[in-house]
Length: 161
Image 1 (spheres, rainbow, N blue to C red):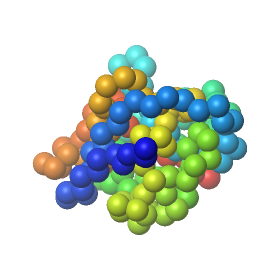
Image 2 (image 1 turned 60 degrees about the vertical axis):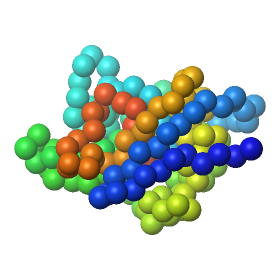
Image 3 (image 1 turned 180 degrees about the vertical axis):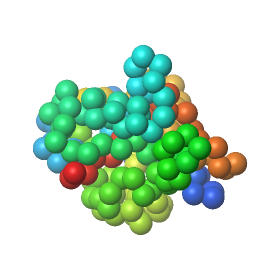
């Protein structure tokens, strides 16, 4: 049975609850440009650049280094990152997971109840389901306007540079 991620949109914020699922025998898609980074950048690095670099480094190993990768996180001017919203950093879509399943055709669909973010589609860069247990995936920024941690997990979106 297909179960939806729990998405709560409020003030430009959403949180998704992911639960584990068994893998699939399908092959990696050449169209993959979306995945979940379960952990942030190594070596204690933080911030948007570190999160983006982490997305790129994870994708590069899988053969997707040709895309410009961005973590779905907000940036703050006082952190030297510019006042930027996650939505404005990821391109216009469409986005596909490891197996070529379309996550969303456009920004509008991604930010609607009509997106295709499910337990079975929000996969890691290697096509794996997330680890056992529930995991919240932040979108953008918290309700008080503060940034979610770039320690992970977060969504990674790729687009043509």
